[in-house]
Length: 109
Image (cartoon, rainbow, N blue to C red; front, side):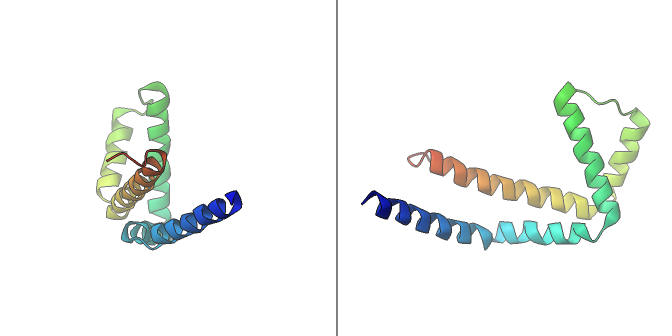
């Protein structure tokens, strides 16, 4: 009996995985990943932004000079691809987080 319950849970998890995989948010995120792979400048900018974010998260501040920060901000503002990718990634991670939260707390709203 317990094996049947586990099999049922696995079957439902596979269905959930399929739903997530085909969700509009996931598709947009995967598409932006593909576009980012073909744009070296966008990849480099994203890498700089990630490093800056890690630095700020780790120490609470950046060692980047004001002129470097201004240059990075200008680069970011001039690159809609990176901006869109970051938004798509944020949306996707929120979707996954919401699903995980519902699994942890099925009675929650």
